[in-house]
Length: 221
Image (cartoon, rainbow, N blue to C red; front, side, top):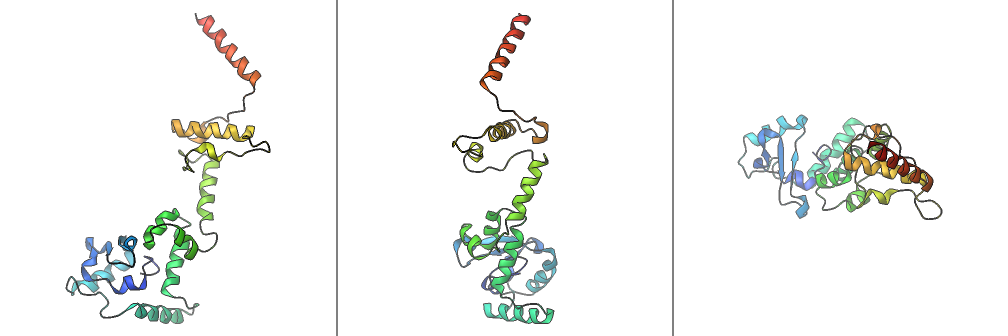
């Protein structure tokens, strides 16, 4: 439960029979270490039958694992590490392992909520291994470059803030073109691959385009 559900050792030992809900699919965590720790978690399929069996013959307020404390969890984690002949870790370390793996697949705020954190700062500083978020971000970038995104992740208040600036402090022509394409994606919902690159416009090209439009309108008239 510490590894698969990122639960604190005390959260494991404090669970009672009525915390198992929806036929063993949901686990309610109440009276946690912090207010943010009060949450519900989906129980992995590999644990459902075991937890349902533990709750079956107990009163609703009876503890699932009996009269034990968090040190009991630590003892069994060390015992299993020794039996598996792997480096010894702690229940807290298993929460860190869960966090680092999860951050490679989902946004960090999802990881923080699963851990019972009020924000992402503690999650990043004390639970994630260095570089844990990089693979997920890289996949988003590669998908965007391949034209697989139909919408762009929001960064800041406006996508216009993400343009690359040249030495003059103004957006470069290339970044301005990418920015216009990105704004078009945001407004129209079209896939990036279907949008032709928008070349930076000079004053001359702008004027010629305007004249051409006027000629067409006059001809139609």
